[in-house]
Image (tube, rainbow, N blue to C red; front, side):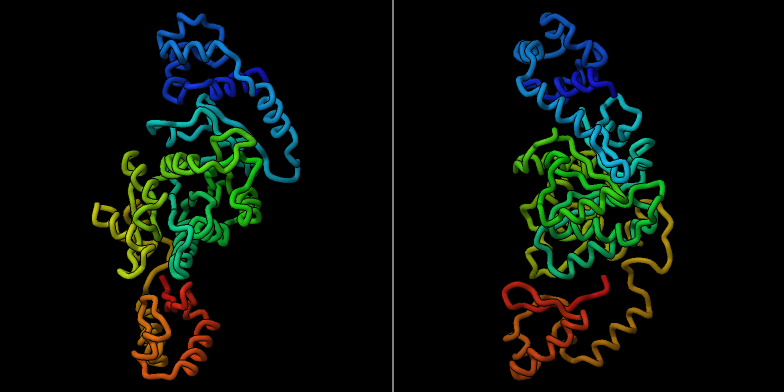
Length: 387
């Protein structure tokens, strides 16, 4: 994209009070943004309100700086590292899935392998959103990783939001089985900041991994900080890019439920993993299931609903051999049988097993080191299942 054309798109996006809907009406009427800004105010009023028309006739004060910053960002990409691009509604690379939604962004900033950005970065009909709690249980985080690993192995690109918790685990699960140099992104992270920033900073290394084998995507201009209002808004892109949305764990008031609601409004499938009736992180999933979301217990459940072939031997599923192994585990460890699958305190386990607290703590530590039990906040323990 030439600098002048980029400047036109940036000006349209920055024009005060002119949202995506008004911008699309203007583009439909006049063509490229440069043509819009050549129109007299009276002509613009045929598509937008008088206030919006006046705003369009004024050059935003931040335009020159943003254009320079964006042009420099595009030109300064490391030739040996991830490529950078800005694509617009008129770009052949713009995802059709987003064009079919009610509120597609005017611009998308992308960072990822050049082989993706130079062709079709968004695989059509091959994306699944995986979202959930920023503070998942140990089992919830493991479920997110295992489901993402299995679903990417089956051919789906995993879309999430680079947040802590379930989002990060889902990205990592897809990257675990990514094939370097393949023609599709392993995972897509839709962020709520400019792409020159990473939020949260704890996920900086993960963001670098995604930029190598996937895509970082934002609708926000470079320099945009992590404003709270940006994150619920970006969720429509997460769900819009995807055939369906899988909610792993979610509280009743959470961004994950916003993403699920947007998926329903966009005509997408919604899946939810059930959990313990005692875990606050499961209540959002249970609410979704009551409202009609599809209950899933394995990656195969998702693949069947999407009419995709499964890959045998990969990912979260329960086979007869696994069931036998689980039965063997409980028979060899009465403590695991007493623990069940709900979080439980040491005091409750003492009452249930009759063990003294010191011996119980030693036994729990051994199981924790074996990866069969996880220690939770508040002094609770939870048995780890095979998802």
